[in-house]
Length: 431
Image 1 (cartoon, rainbow, N blue to C red):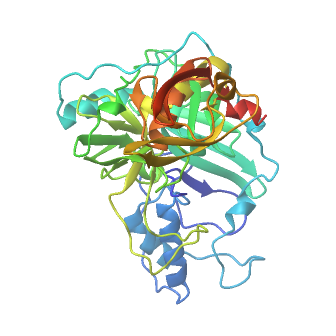
Image 2 (cartoon, rainbow, N blue to C red; image 1 turned 180 degrees about the horizontal axis):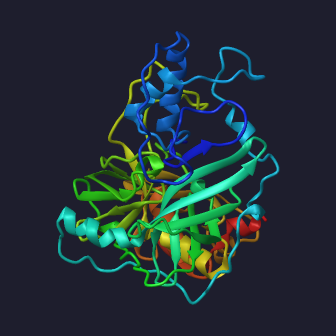
């Protein structure tokens, strides 16, 4: 599922997109005098509109896009006529690696936790309280055709300047800057990357600022379908500090979306390019999710736009804060993420009326096998929590961490057994 909410735009030689605001967020694009559109522009318009929703184009209003295309004149180039949208691969540095990011040091003394929910606030109160904790994130990379830029959002989570955002906002970049949304003076701060988890699409940044306001974190486990939520971010990369509202449409979206093992919050709150890394807030004004993606219906399985596809609205996705905090705290402490694992293959099933996770095989030399967990065992609870789904079992493992112990209740030949063991770090094993 690649419909990320980051905004990316190219700069440099070669074929250029329609005019966009200069380099920094602020004014919307100026209107252009209409001219007759060439016949081939209709196809380009469909492609560009698809890219806008995919986070491939930003910094101009969708309402002005058709006018800009109609009036755009493209220079002759080696790409031939009629000119086509440039291959985005040409804008990237093929030799880029995460080592090129601006790295900072972790701090084990910094650990985040959720807070109890307070009284419900009005939308106005939530926006006013959230805005000082939000930043505009700009990440750049110098490629073969010049500079490409990602625009997104970040959430300040400590007074010392730690920020949560999406990994895909900083991916393939070599410089990162942030700007306080409450500071419309366009003061930019250089930010360092403390660490990231690419699979779960989260990154931790650090910048030096004064008088910072951390966002309160709420328990995403307390959310229920139908609860009102608010999204705060920077749609289109220049509509800074925009709020939208909606409800929780579904919880634990997992294999239906991308199968990364971290159930996502589905919301009807409008999300657009530039919202990546922003806050999903509950009615108490607490951050309960990190807005990360949307489903548009405009792409095929291989990521290509489908011109005839229906436009799907109102399906935004956010990373639950309670689920991601164990990984964030690990990054804060060590600079790296982890992946706590039992070391088994398993599947969901029901045996004699009891639902659970059945063990298909146990890897050699893992603590679970040494403790007696065997093929055919049905895990019905872990650390006192009933588990009937893989998502439920993963949640227990992730929140326990590699440093903790898991006590599993298993059913074997009709009898219940308690088996306790330590977990292994799958990421560490992978090198």
